[in-house]
Amino acid sequence: MTKGIRIHANGGIETMRWEEFELPPPGAGAVRIRHSAIAVNFSDVNVRRGGFYIAQPLQFPVIIGNEAAGIVTALGPDVTGVRVGERVAYVGSGGPFYEMTGSYAEERNLPASCLVRLPDAISDTQGAALLLKGLTASMVFNRVFRPKPGDTILIHAAASGVGLLLCQWAKHLGATVIGTVGSAEKAKVVAAHGCDHPVLYRETDFVAAVKRIVPEGVSAVFDGVGLDTFMPSLDCIRPFGMLVNYGNASGHVPPLDILLLAKKGSIAVSRPAFSSYIADPQECRVACDELFDLVARGILKIEIGATFALKDAAEAHRMLESRATAGAMILLP
Ligand SMILES: NC(=O)c1ccc[n+]([C@@H]2O[C@H](COP(=O)([O-])OP(=O)(O)OC[C@H]3O[C@@H](n4cnc5c(N)ncnc54)[C@H](OP(=O)(O)O)[C@@H]3O)[C@@H](O)[C@H]2O)c1
Image (tube, rainbow, N blue to C red; front, side, top):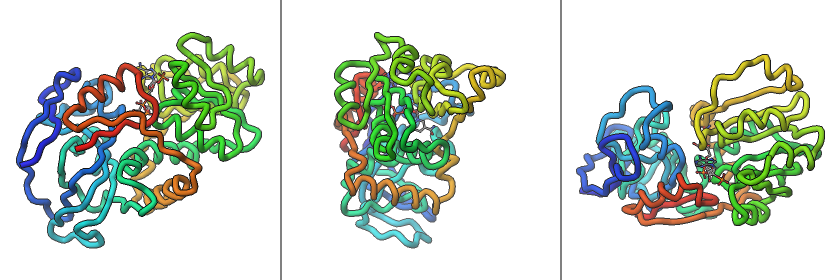
């Protein structure tokens, strides 16, 4: 028997139950992992709540969670290239993010093909905190818009898990970084992670603040907030610039009249989804190696905002939804 956090229906944090369940032996091509650090992501909240993201009804009970690190403890038939005792991490285990979840548990089985071996320089906690958020930052900067020296960019929710990595990476690439944050405390955190101009967007009109710093507008906006920030962000961008909307922490962005992009100065909008960018395992490994190298060289520092016992995952969700955290949140089994 093993233990984990299961939901039996969509809803609030009261649906998250600490329960014991039977874990079968790993099937063909799969391994069993004993988790040592489990990431909390906003997508876990979206799966728990249900709603606009989820294409089909979930098959309850569901163990939520998509990302963790741990040790391989057993191999199913036909597994090659992985050994018992190896230290690994993973994000996703095939299919869309709301399918084949199961990381909020002491142990789980998953396809060996999903595993990323952790180098010695990366701890289990760092591995769990890095993969989804780091690969999202990698997707955005390597595949959608790469800031360069001379660019001024705007990063929304700059103290978020993804936001803090974007800040540090953009600074390393030579850009000037404006970052919106929800509190004065978060402003201090982002300033320590490469943000030149923190803007308290709950108290200040961020469009006016951006125009004061860079009157012609920013080269690009990176937006994981969605509903509350998307439309005003169009007014922050210089002609031919880009709005990259990668998340919806405040809600879904409504349909966009594409002609507006012409009127705003021939700007572009991109809405990348992480899973399509890591679908090729080889490309995913290359992206992971780049991230591990950036961390090992101290260019990306992984900020762990809070850790909780796995059984207290509901409290972690409460904090995430109340916007109380900066950086990554980790559950310890
Ligand atoms: N496209 C993809 O493939 C992909 C991959 C990874 C993540 N994402 C999405 O990107 C977004 C950010 O991810 P993350 O891991 O960086 O998030 P996170 O660490 O959970 O932080 C989210 C932040 O968003 C801000 N926020 C603004 N309005 C909010 C609201 N109504 N409710 C909650 N938070 C709100 C808060 O910061 P302030 O207090 O500073 O406002 C909050 O701390 C999420 O929507 C996530 O699902 C997408």
